Image (cartoon, rainbow, N blue to C red):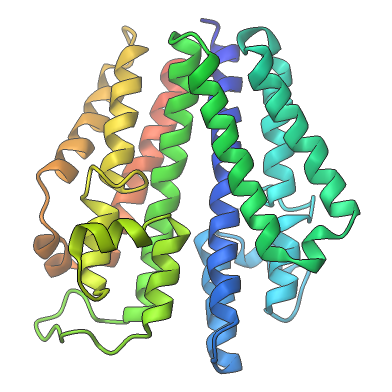
Length: 320
């Protein structure tokens, strides 16, 4: 496969996954903002969301105050923000158009319709009337895109590059969400010698985090007890049967990456396999003992290195 074709497929998948992840993060913050809380707590939540996406500086260039309406507008329909949902959906559609011949008709029509329908919703004011419904729509279209892709495409290199992009983006986002949200809610709960039983953190905040990664029902099924921060961390980091966990993302990433391996990708595949093994044999008590923030920061660095390696080995070389 031509590296340019692989590049478009890889980024098409990353952008549609990023749009969904952004919708998930905005939705959990929006739902949390409806709970009783002080103005300072509300601002802290929206500031954390900007931090997750590394958009604090860019947001500050356009807005002085950090509030729900401005942040949601900036991250949903501000076309000057490359990480906004509108920018991600447009970029996914443009990448799909560039490799139209490598996609099935169903995949292309799904991507194209998503872009057209999103613009229609924005013009009709659907987002202003009900932000939560708009976020659900974005998640549904992302699910539909993945389902059509897996259900209609030949299981060849094109599909593998799409899957690699999806799981790399998902791993990065889950780690960012964990890092910022756990720091905001649990403070120094982890990595200390005097871990208390549950810090009386608001149940609704923890359940909102789980719902943001479709993990609330899964948590109840796996642990069958009250929501505890260390269990949430274990579920979203080490459980390979939790679809959006770091372990599950790395399992799928290595599986698909190994299918497209070439003569120069050995080191990248080795690093991916090592990260997969660290998650497979890791223990949550060891992670918490060394500090969750430090662990997730290192994980994000390693995922970033994998992205660079994949681009170097398979895709169009990135500009220096």
